[in-house]
Length: 548
Image 1 (tube, helix red, strand yellow):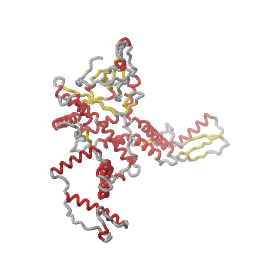
Image 2 (tube, rainbow, N blue to C red):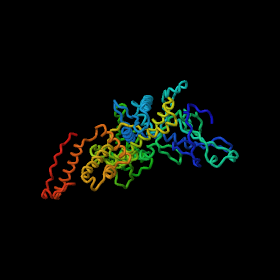
Image 3 (cartoon, rainbow, N blue to C red):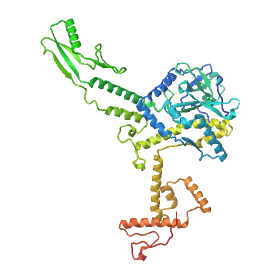
């Protein structure tokens, strides 16, 4: 393989894995080619590259339509929410098992990456490019004299000019005779990026080969395995956009042609020959026809009798023996004000882009309630989950940039990064609190059940059962909370005994009130009402209520 442009990060030696007869698929849409050896060949890249170039161009033409642009704006605004004071995204390292010094360095380098991207000001444009094109490329520029200084600049690359290529090494049969079966089945592969400043639209696969570590590549995760192409989230809306545009154009043509009422003139030409009849008809048309044209450029009204359009009156000859000269009226089109078909295709376009139908302009109540989660539309919840998946996929851009920055500055090694990457998360600012409202309501309901079941703990239910079945705590959470409560009690930060008794008394009083309302004889746990003469009044318990 020829020399590649750019730099490569020195990777640590990995433990060899078991051989496989299937090539590793990273699902990144890279073009596979086979090179080297006597039997080496190259795959025809004509159709794939040209189609991919045209596909990205079509995506960009789609967002020029007002309805599609509005839907894309809804998605982008929900995903990237930035205020004037806050950065739209922050790195979350709570699950990372590293020292505070390492975490501090990671946060500083992440802030440097955001500065290089100018993400605080251009977050909307960056995410919109990724969402529309389905892929995002950045060239990672470093100082060759000082590579330990980290990234110097991040330059955007048009995805129509670059693509990822995976080249497999093909050996001759005689070279494989002395090798074992596992070596024969496992082919060596090399990945690089192919860049052509004129675009990769033609049948040629010529261009500059760039090292994979020099380019940041983030795609949508949607891939057409038949054509080996990465698709955008707009791909399934191509048909909906074309249908909407077609139905709107046909509606305009129909209304222009059928809206006015036109007259039909039947002119009696007697027994005149054909040529003279046509000449007589033209004379009558010129005599009675009054065509005034409004010039939108100059604002003048002028007479133009040269042309006849489909919106004008009809002049028809009639032979002798007919009813003579007659004028009738052709009525205009009916039901021109119906827009049900247009609204249907608008909703279809929004559904294709995973945007709720309620957000279509003019579709009833376009707002949604931020109160109880049970009052929130199901479409909004599904849209919120879709936005979460977009954020997780888009975070791959920051993962790759953060890896390059940390490895170049010798903060972490490539081997350590493989272990750390899965514990690094990113926190996006959001303004829809559907998930938070749902969690709060579930917690409230569980606590209400706890209050009702508290008197029966130790009699019918165990504390471990309540933690697992009512509070839905896992084994790790139970162990972690137990250790934290012991630590708090040792430090004097636990719940006082008086407070616990007050809570217990509140639960007992609530149970008594419920049984009294049902007409039952209230019987509190651990108490015998027979000593009180069967009275339904709960015995008084002198417990001081602590301030919480």
